[in-house]
Image (cartoon, rainbow, N blue to C red; front, side, top):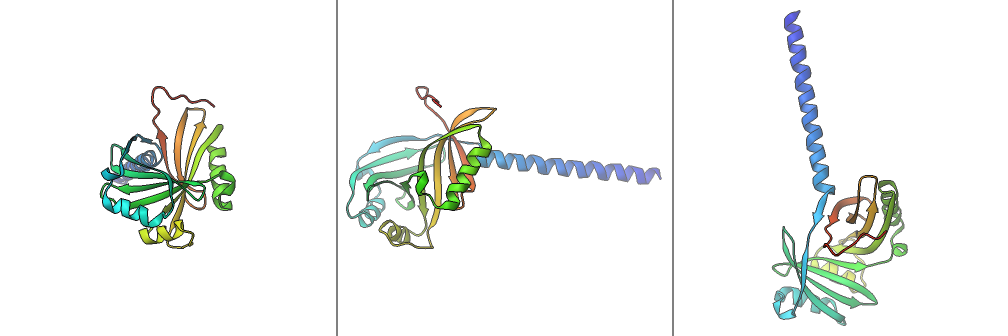
Length: 206
């Protein structure tokens, strides 16, 4: 009987240890996914400083552009090139990796113009997560094969392109208030959240 009790206690302790370890891992995963900081340094550069592959893709995709400006972006994890331009009455941001390969195209859109599912999902997340919030900017993000993304930018829809929505917003909860960047899928489900690190001169006015 004593031997049985000993093994029962040992088994129970092992079960609790495993359960506790899984809980810790799950918590760390969520912290990694949803509590990252966005720290980027951006500076304007000339087109001659941009990889030729990036310049070629942009030239072939945007036949008529206005107010084109190139930027070099640096973060703790990567270096990239970004072209900002006006196309068909909308602001586009086109990002390339350090070798000049296309990463994504982001187009500024209005909340009222989002697809219904994305609109409802984003609103539901903000309303249930924060006591107060205000959207600063929404960008529709296009990723996929470069030639397919080009076709979509030029007005030819394709199912090969993945649509996401990058939302920059102020969010206030009982614990804190901050400027956030949330990445949502086409159904409005949060995929990633980063706290935007403000400069000392920036203020949260909301």
